[in-house]
Length: 229
Image (cartoon, rainbow, N blue to C red; front, side, top):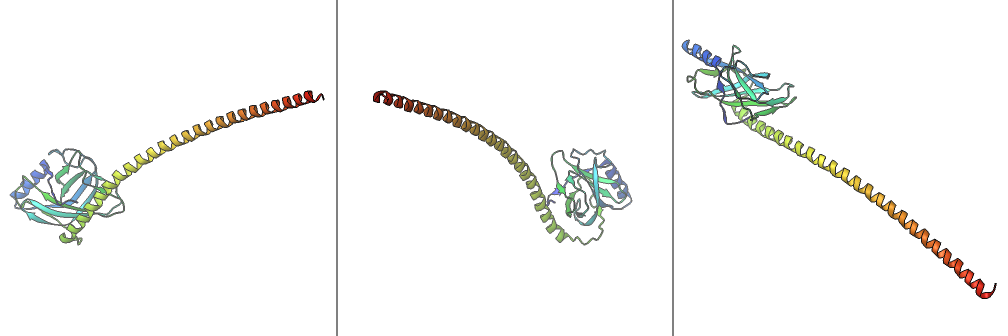
């Protein structure tokens, strides 16, 4: 998804759980990633995502620093939505931290396609080595995870470009429809003008024929008079 560390907001409930576990000499374990589609500025008093849609178990992960974890999960269900909020869930179901942003979108979860969720999670403001990752052992090793993350990033970028292309195509289609209506109107006006021109031409032709007939009749009359007929 991204190689940049994701810095979530540590919740009051998550901090209290860390402090309690630290006194007992226990590391808290992150077991799931929860995703939702609401974009906002998180609050430390939150106890859940504002609109959670799906929750996925951690497939693989490791500590890459005293306060930084690398973890991966695989979203492979039929849900479809924009990912705009993320919660990191402890083994007891307590959200440890939440990330969201009013403007930024992380990715698009498409139905029927596997999406690798790969995070470098920075836990600022907590005791060193107080949190670890519980893996399902699903076989998503970190080397493969990095490669899939790159592919996922490319896929997401293409999806975002596709949204832009769809908007551009829709705008182009509207412009073509407007141009089509204008062309039809122009053709109708041209047809009406041609009909008027043909009618005027026919009127002139009838007048010429009538005048020619009158001249011919006059010539015959003059000829008869001259010959004394």
